Image (tube, rainbow, N blue to C red; front, side):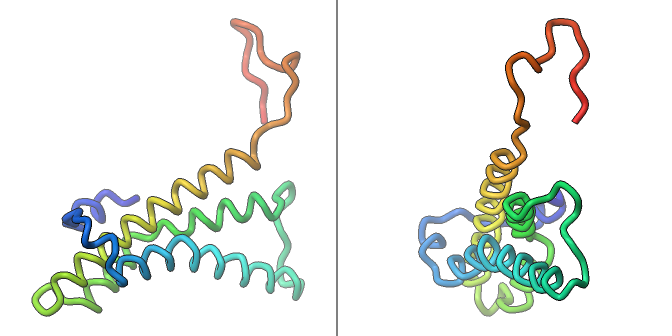
Length: 138
């Protein structure tokens, strides 16, 4: 996540923001909408033979990567500031920032878990390096 986005977010974490419809909409759009859009359009491009999945990449791995696409700070905060100017809509602007943080956090956790699960190397205990030996190449 860009450091400047976190530094400039200025989010006050209040329990009321969690139940705000703007916060919920932004969070759901980031952790469900962006991966859905990425998967849908990539599937269409592959089905129409414009491209193909890279060698060794399966759809579950691609899903994990698409979930990481939900980490969206810069444009989300920019559009939030345009949609809800602080002077006119301070509560909605704060809720949009909170939703951006929440959606990005959920996307990070979900995408990381999916990639860790689906990219786990299949190794036997005999394949593990012994003390002092080099790690295997993957």
